[in-house]
Length: 160
Image (cartoon, rainbow, N blue to C red):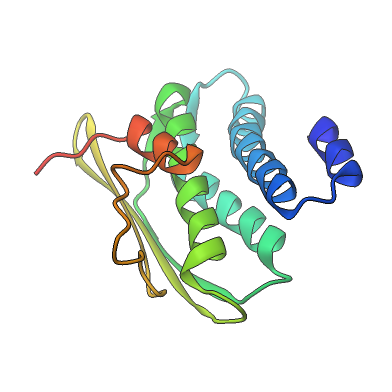
């Protein structure tokens, strides 16, 4: 985080600054998991409700200068091992970051819903919705080459 922060001080390009901030958010999402692991003294499972609340709070603080977004969290009492918690945290980070950056342009406000439910012993459903402006008509998230969309697609599996 310190290295990324020192790079911010020397950059003037808004696109580069945004990329560094996105990277800081990804690092923070992973750092929160490791902090939880150290606090639980050897238990390699993360309480997802608390973790997701902390990721949301961090991102709200990060973007608080720009707009007001309300969050509605419906998170079951689920504990995941670190191998599942890290990718889930990164997916949540990317989706929330995209909502702040694109769903509510200007000073628009809105809401984001995050739900995590357990479907079976090894299956979970994460839903993230916002009431923002939506994707541009020609946008295809499966064709996007952005790092955020690539991470979301790479870390998730969908079943119908």
